[in-house]
Length: 426
Image (cartoon, rainbow, N blue to C red; front, side, top):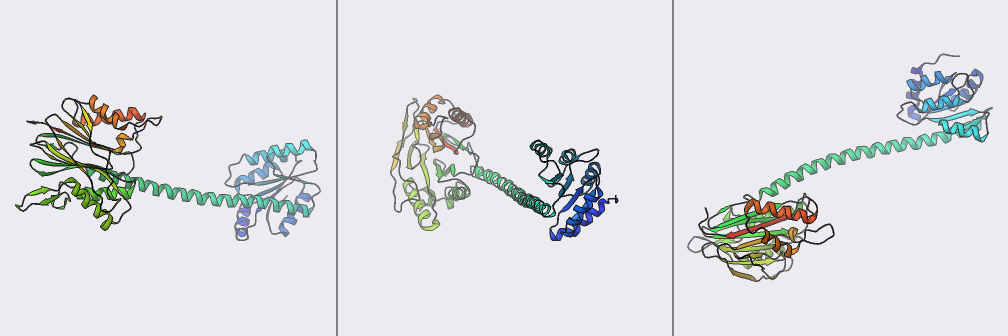
């Protein structure tokens, strides 16, 4: 028997790679039988390696790539099925097609060979035309396996790229959420004669909620709570633009303010502000987005206030005696209908009265059975939290909604403005 050089296998594999030939290992303890099969394979253009025993064949398979094996069943020492089991136990990067050569044709023998891991059988003496057909069948299987591996590699590479894109997007969204939170410069601004608590609790994605305030002068304050339609980047960008329109940091750009003839800063009526914003969205910005809002204008010294509701949940007024009333008539969202107008609500606040502007993330917060928290739930909660303000009120509000929802995560942003008129505020 001629010595077998593993390097010959590798060289043969490299030489045959361009023409997609397979490396075939012929295993038979009979040199004559082995050479007869190997000569036919060589004529057909395959890279052929020979082994005279199962042990030798197993060593070759461990040292170099073998794609297809033709192994005799009956051999001294390790027989064909035993070699097949050992071959299947090897760690390989690709599948190896295994054909047993045997004179056994009984059902039990076939089952035994299949159980050992064989893919096909060929009876001895070997018919070369049948051999060629069986090898072609094996090549089709190996070809499909190679194609599947290639597609899986492409899929894995694509998934890796998608994961990288997703991770980058998550980082960008996290930064965007932080920037969105930065639009709320102060959660508990110091306002002479009043307590103001602002809450913006994101649901985990970019949303369109925004709450805030802007001073008109030393004794007058604007409050707002709004919600841009939809979620995502577009809504967040619109929210940022609206924040600029109602900014207290740049009053000269605030759409709710104007310079009076005497040079002082004055406030437009809330309904007029919404009319201006409505025209801006429909005529200049030209977006499909719209938003709901409650905008309030409060005179701190007298307690006189007026507000307008545009599709946002009804603001709740809690008097100092604990009684609660919902204000507003609903109104159209801003950015839907040209020349829309809104009705203002005038009210007189007294020391100890509280005004809550809340988002639909509060009123539509759903329990596991689908029951919404509702405006009635908000009224009950205001009664329960009558003595709380600032961070304590906001924390208790979030906790109550989490108990109602049965989860710490919300499907929508939670936002609110709590305003309380006081006297001699420390």
